[in-house]
Image (cartoon, rainbow, N blue to C red; front, side, top):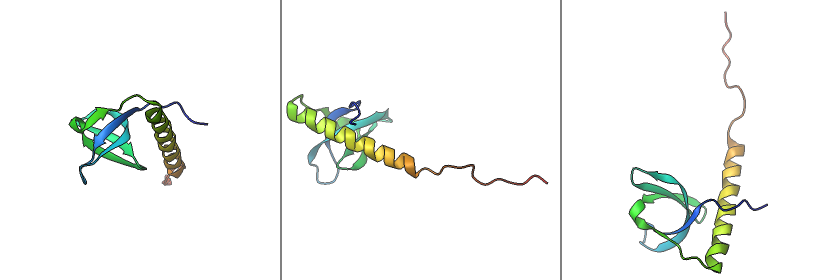
Length: 92
């Protein structure tokens, strides 16, 4: 099941190479920086490197693919969190 895309599709200029790529803006801006998910990785970039992507069928398809990939990674990370009570100290 594909979750509804709740992230904005954006163009971002990454520091390495200066190329412009499409990604998902995840989270809110903090201290002028924004987190962007692109090609299986999350980058933190300055907000002024982000621009809105054009709306087209290709952009919509990319948006859905990136959103489902990001959701799958988030779910996998959730499964890796330790579950349990931690260390219990005996009371003497």
